Length: 302
Image 1 (cartoon, one colour):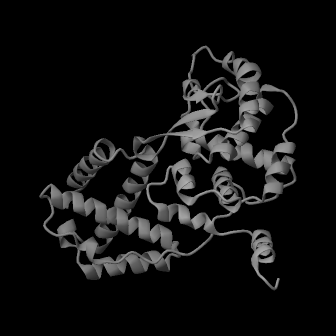
Image 2: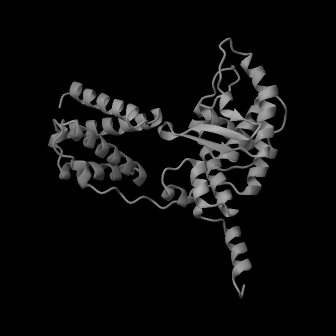
Image 3: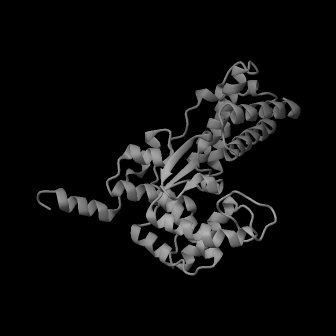
């Protein structure tokens, strides 16, 4: 299998993912990396074509990944990427057999999502003091992430027109270009109003290029996804909360706190933008304090 043909097939697959499946740039990047990694394995093993790959070759590849101590989730994703790629090539009559469909995906590790306790969330927000433009922006970002549970990728593409503070709703463009409306609480609305009226105009004035994006950096241009992690880490340190923290943990906290306080699982599924209910069910864990409270309230001999 020559490298020119490899690249041609990969480009066809990427167009299919982008146009027919509506995959995000992040998903396309993961597929590309996984397929290129398998191409590298093929060349090392002297396999000239995907049609030459046998189940035994696949077992060798998976064994190598585990030997290199890749997480089960990563191994599963790599196999799933190749399975989808081979399925596409078979559909296009470029491949006769999908050998990747013969291998079962590694069982995922059952790790609960990490989250902040409600008291820690209060501490985080209390630590954001000041009325400088960046203070107003950071407070609005964190309040919005926690109030809505949206992904950072979704937050980074928000425009001013997606927000309606008068009725407290936000139009979110999720995975697969799917749209959903999510409500916004009063604390987030207050923070957003302060940022939009007093913070954003100062930041926007730093750039000669007008932008419709909601959140801007100190240069007045669009805030990158990576910057959200930096902002959160900075604000966590200021609040003396020394967690391994990511913006996604606020999404976990959003879902956990809703369910712990009695929200319906399907409502939380809709708010998070999950296609399958099973994805949302990972948040049905409860804190030790919540377990103890429910036990004391409901057990007849507690």
